Amino acid sequence: MNLENITKIPTIIGPTGVGKSSLSFELAKTISGEIINTDKSLFYKLLNIGIDKPTEAKMDLIKHHLIDFLNPKSRFSLLEFLELVNFKINTFEKKGITPILVGGSGQYIMALLENWKVPKEKPDEKYREKLVLLSEEKGKDFLYKKLKKEFPSIAENIDKNNTRRVIRGFEVGRSGFKLEKQQEKREFTKFKVYGLTMDRGLLYKKIDSRIEKMFKNGWVEEVENLISKGLNKKSPSFKSIGYSEVYSFIKEEISFDDAVNQIKKSTRNLIRHQYNWFKLTDNRIRWIDISGKNDNNYALNIILNDLR
Image (cartoon, rainbow, N blue to C red; front, side, top):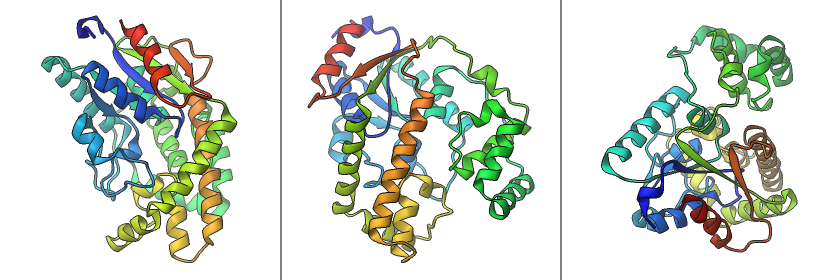
């Protein structure tokens, strides 16, 4: 394919488990591109099975960026992400490399696509501690309702069950960052965005099968290794779906069946939340329904024909 014809950066988004990673891999092979990951769970070192990280063989064949670079005890802000991924994109442009963006972390990828201006402010630890205490005393539902009342435009894009994100929502609102203005529909000037989707029932079945496979592949042992290195449910990397549930199983706080069921439920909640960010009615995104498709050829051909 003539790479000179690609004027915008191919970007593949969609819900977890739909097949974004495998499609981006095939696209990168076809157009001799390199992949930039925007899924924050994949940033962390030592997390592999539970986040379905690309295999070493695939990463040896096609260069992947923003994978396996972050200590699992470290936090990584939206601002840091935007600065790093934009640096990568600029470097690629200078070298004549075609980047392919892929990921399902809604806020992160949309902030990049819409070119949000994020304030450079450090978290107020005392304010954060106050909110944590409020959540512990009155519950996460109370905290979310408070956020919804004070900063409604921020609350509508945050999962009410993700207390860490709810607290961050207060911090962002308090900083004066006008999220509602950032989320007006802006054209994706630098990006050509493709969204993968499929029938919700089929996706849930696929997810359930993937979760069961992860356990067979040694997810419990992986988390035991992380615990041995000092990680626990408060570690930033354990906010990735499933890790806190597996931790609770290892610590005999819940049964194995309860852990599996909770992970499946959390994943379905995540999918619903992702569709709040990536709306099927958003005409800036070219949606590709891959229900019933057994390989990447259908979606890949649509993207290649569109890029030509």
